[in-house]
Length: 227
Image (cartoon, rainbow, N blue to C red):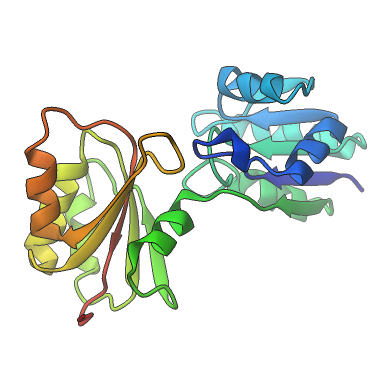
């Protein structure tokens, strides 16, 4: 049977792209990716020439069959996202499930992951944690936060620069403004920022800025954590 390779790509710094990832991408028949332009730039940078086809959150249900047709035909396929590990708040779950169901091999080429990078940098307990990813923008958002009221594990959230203050205020209202937290912004990039403080202090820090740029990973201590 064929192999579906799940390949982690850099979350910012191209130097984090592993030799093994580049080797496998050079060997597969085709590459499924979120954005062919973004992935095209990455592959061009490393002088890898492979057919690309889009596989993103808006079309993955329709494109799964195209991907599995390649596998069924004897071709190995790689799946990459714009940044980080596919299937972690990115498309990938449906493709991996389908590959397993059809008896193909699934092989993960590990690498950069924004969630674990921020967790490691946070100085908050990492022996047990839960990944919440992006909260719903509207319906169900408040409920999701309230369900975490008694969560004792460290929590990890993804958020855009446009909603990060809103998220901090929502968490502060439910968890308390003194809850310890840490955000990672522009991880692995030139202007990387790691800031650890209480939720209230993080809100003040961001509201004082003339503008907020860069994607955020927010790590929040669980209930009953003390320093």
